[in-house]
Each structure stands twice: as structure tokens, then as C-alpha cells.
Image (cartoon, rainbow, N blue to C red):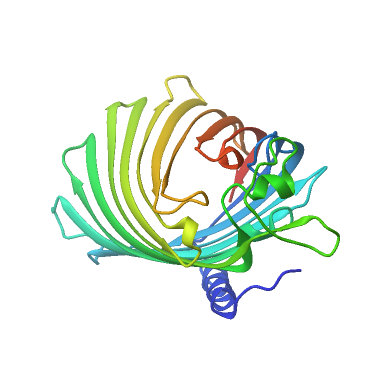
Length: 324
């Protein structure tokens, strides 16, 4: 098994210890299965059936006599592909919010550590530490606005390939990637780089309850990512729209669309490049006393001037969520 950094492991164990000491902790278990038609996110990538296991622990420390609210969480998920290699993600974090009596503005801070390991695409392995601050404005009983500013540091323990090169290693289609020197067997070997990212993100969220059964969420963000791997530094502008309708007893339907424009400072062929990333998703949930059954379908596309960076992906999941 691939190693987890000490700082991340310590935070995970700490949150686990705190959570299990708290009787009011909420436990969520999610079991699902589906199909991912492009697990590596490359042109003409391989698809596979997948089984996903997820467990999460949450606890809130809010007390009525205090103007503060705090919460911690621990989450682990494992994706088991039937025909490809597996991956897992561990996350732990918390938040604290100041709740002045009768105030409409609620400031807060939050933080998170994450560890991701992928046996299919080793260069996607990462350790991430994220910190941020926010302020929420409760405009009225139906509308709330939030401004979030976050900073993250991400370390990739494995070297990464140049843009477009991943398709030569994992894809079945276009092989026109940027290649480096020739190996001992006469085949060109990919150019690889060490990578560490730092990025700042400013995000604005709006939650609007149009009626007791209908909710709309809007989100816009601007991100600046600085990477030691020269071709990964970029600026990004994007947004998300999500609607939720729960007008039928025990049923909920939601749909979303998202987009992002990423301007990269450098490209393998010289100059820069701009990628357009967008997607959509739909989910239906049927609630029962013992569990919630759900079906979800997601589609994403990345359009890039580099052939090896243009791909489509569609994934489906069907499963059950148990809450204790």
C-alpha cells in the first residue's frame, strides 16, 4: 500500500479519535456501483465497472448558550474498478463559525487535509492541505450569500508527465504527445517533472430557496495556481448552477451544470494554451426509513488545443446511503 504522509495520518487519527469519543457523532455509509467510461480521463480511455465504498463521520460542537459553532469530519472512500486499478481518498478537517445573536453576517474559518492514491494513474497521487476563511450573509429567510477565500498546498509524490503525454501511456487513441529521449528499447520515453502546487481561490456562493420544495444554488470562482511543473501553472474562471426539487413525498431530483476556462502560461509547443472544461449531472433520490437509494449520472468534457488533453467522460452510480 502506498504511504500516507505523517501530517495527514496524524490529522486523520486525531479526528477519528475525537469523533468516536462523541456520542452525538453522525455516521454515513455509502455503497454504490456503476460504470466509468474513461477512468484515466484521456482521449479514448478505457472504461470499467466500479464499486464505491464511502464512510464519513461528522460531529458538531454548537451549543445554544455560545455564539460559536464548530464541527469536525473524517471521510474515506475506495473505488474498486472491475477491469482497472483501484484508488482511494482520505479526508479530515473541520470548521468554526461565529454566530452573533441576531446578526445577518456570519464569519468563519475552515481547514482540511486530504490524501489521494490512484494505482491506475500514479501521477495523480497527491497530499493536500487547505485552509480558508468565509463570511456568509443571511439576506432573508430564502436567500443567503457567501464569500470564501482559500489557500491550498498540494504535493505530488510521483513525477508527472508533460501535457498531452498521459494519452501515450494510458489512452487507446491519439498518440501525439510530447516525447523526450529514446529509451534502451528504442522507444521514446516521456518527459516527467516534479510537481508541487500552491493556489488561491476566491469563490462566491448563492443559495436561494424559491419555494419549500425548490432550491437553486449558484457559484462563481477565480483561481490562481502556481506549480513547480512549468506547464501546470494557470488561472481559472468558472461557475456552477444547481437546482433541487423535492415536491414529491420521499423523492428528490437535482441537476447541475458547471464550466471553467483555464489559461495556462506555458505549453509544450511554445506560448500558452486555453482549455475549456464543462459538464453536467443529474441525480434522483428515493428516501426510506433505513436508507436513501440514489441514481446519478455525470458527464464532463475538456476541450484543449493539445490533442492529448481533449477527452470526454461519462460515469453512472447507483447505490444506497445509510445514516446513523
